[in-house]
Structures are given as C-alpha cells and as structure tokens.
Length: 65
Image (cartoon, rainbow, N blue to C red; front, side, top):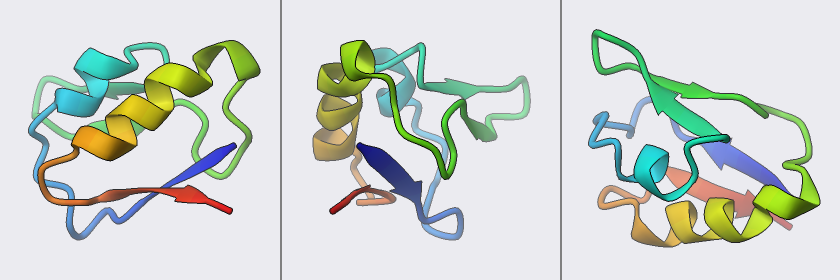
C-alpha cells in the first residue's frame, strides 16, 4: 500500500500522526513528515495508515490503488 499526500491540501491537523505515528509525524513547525512517501507502507503498519487516510479532515491523504 502506498499513501499519497496532497501537500497543498494538508493543514497539519496531526490526526494522521495519532492514527499511524510510525508512518506520519509533525515537526515543531507543524509540517507533516511521511516516513514512506512514495514507497510501500510495511504490512504491519497498513491498518494504521488506512485509518489515517480515512480520518484526515481535509482529505489530504489517499491510498494509491
């Protein structure tokens, strides 16, 4: 599974980091960091990543088919 981030849409709410802290994090300025940007999320982290995609309040995350 690959998660794409619409960087222009992301507002740094951090809900994704709460759902999948091994995949997403926010820095001190509130900027999102995606540990697997452009790469497959490891199988054991997929449930959290899918949850993060589904709860993003601005739909900045999308699972790539």
